[in-house]
Length: 135
Image (tube, rainbow, N blue to C red; front, side, top):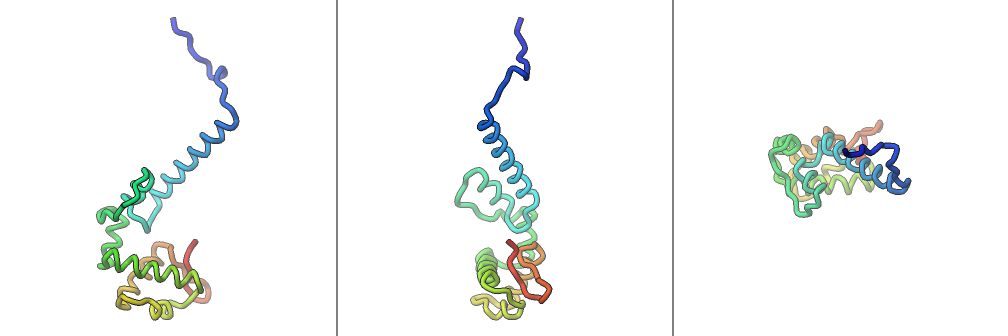
């Protein structure tokens, strides 16, 4: 006959318990980020989670499909998005001034990217109608 192990007979050190708890919290936060992300390709998120470094947008997940509607290449979108982020992190500005500061892309494409960033909560408009980057 085998003897059953009683839960009361198992002990775990406080240090080990806290380490396991931190790991579990990080895993849970990763799952929540994956489920709620609106601005990053789901395949990129998964591949990054498992340690992949050279990842690209899949083009077929819900996030990518929304971005595909903009009719912008990844290079154009990234260029404008990076410029907008840099500009509004330096100072809060109205949309017209931001558009005037973006180079290398037509204004209509810049407007599409800014609109997408606002709809996906990366850019917010404050009470003075100045745009700022959501942290």
